[in-house]
Picture: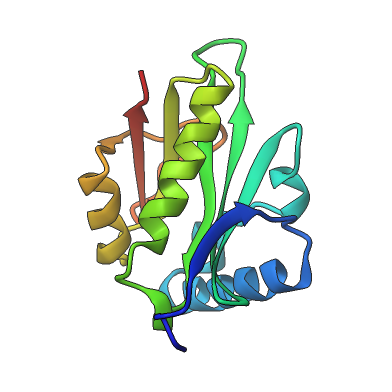
Length: 160
């Protein structure tokens, strides 16, 4: 892939064929790292408006990354957005696509007046964990419907 081509970040329907192809690659990869009960794949429908947003990152005409945020307003706690389905092709990693996707998803939360971002990731993904820590995410306990899982790492960031 020629990464010298122009790149762009734009809204993407999570049901689009290219988005589904990236999500399938992500699921296959996660399946090599974790048992099924430790994978928490959000269906594409859960990342569409009004309950979510989904974005793609293209290099030239090729979708190389995607990510979404699902909005939550629990009755017993603060509103938050959960980062879901962040994935970048191996050939495009290390070039800032994930960082740009994360910034856009955080901006979407701020635009809604939501000052808290949360995520769940796996312990066998040191690059992702490193990115989240560099972006200011800190470890916390399980949230929402998540149960404790020794293979999961739960993180959050105040956006205020």
